[in-house]
Image (cartoon, rainbow, N blue to C red; front, side, top):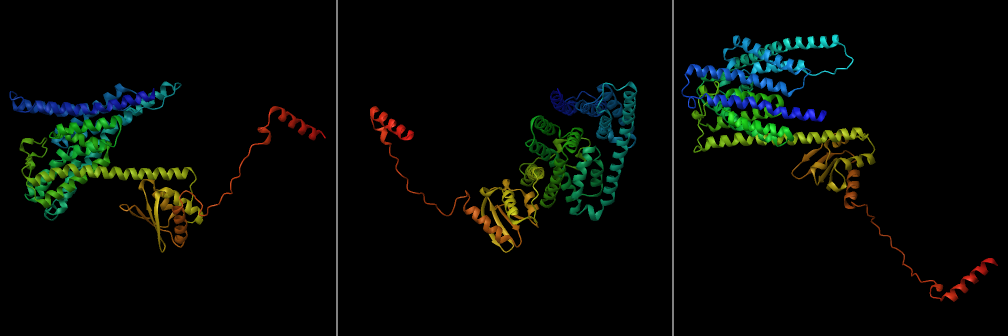
Length: 491
């Protein structure tokens, strides 16, 4: 029963992508080219209503994804918190309703107070009532605390940007820091400040590199990151990331949808989000030094959406094509590298816990024989050792496969960490004065891997086995022979 309930929650996680598609469909439907009969004022009202309603529906979908002790109370709490945030936050920033990500965070924070709790059948009504009152008080406090915390963080980031965006810092290569700051603020729905400062103060390569890096990251690098990350997941998570990748490709020109996609990546996969920020800095560097022409103007940079008709996808320009290709391949390489490092750490951690559970306590101060056996085990056994060489206090060991080697065990056996040449599959281990002993023993074991003896023992000449005499006698002679044997035994 518990497995079925868990599987149902996994299926519900796909529901949080539905509001993104509905928001994208409503935005496309309200385009001037699709519905020219609408007046501009009425179109703005409908767009604003869609930008407020569908993020709230996203918060409700997240609520359905999490367990609770009272589903009705949970949904009502999320709705009230979202309405409260929508009514309060415009006093802080009038443009918050164009991208109400903080309102979504304030509404989702109430889910922490509605998580299920262990209830015993003999629990009385007073204890249940006190728990419900405590949950309601948290529902009232958590959105307020979330809004205050987010406002403080945003103010500090705005202050940092205002004080550092000067002639010395802003016009140098150090301005690369503003690209990840913009993406982080875009995930929270407050990214207009950086664009405004760039437009007002600078008209040089800094602005061009900044705009180009933001465009290629949102249009190319984000789907590539989601797709590569989905290759290292299983089941419903792979389906979720694949659908999110498809939605990001379709909706990367809509500011609210893009902010929600970045927010999902930031919350569920912060490591991949950090790699996306690193990719943005690399793309900024390429655009800055290659002097790529601007792909669009700053005023078109997600205010609140980006008009793709005004973005230059000039494939005849080889420099822009190179930048777009790098925006795709850089996050792929970074994600692959990070997953390989994570795999190596996981293997070392498993080996370490396996050694602890089995009582593996051999270290650098143990006897030589024990250290030799432990060294063989850490290197993957005799079959994994290809060659051994000695150079003073150092021992050079060439292995057949790196996967069989336990770096955790090697580090515990050696006074210093071994030096690794992964191309030649060589491990340089500083043994100390016992390196000669280790080299001799390992060399003999490698030269004789199957425990064969160096000296051959000659077998004796096999003797012939002849049949007994009575086997060829007839039955009468055989009976007489047995009778004589019996008489001799009696006498």
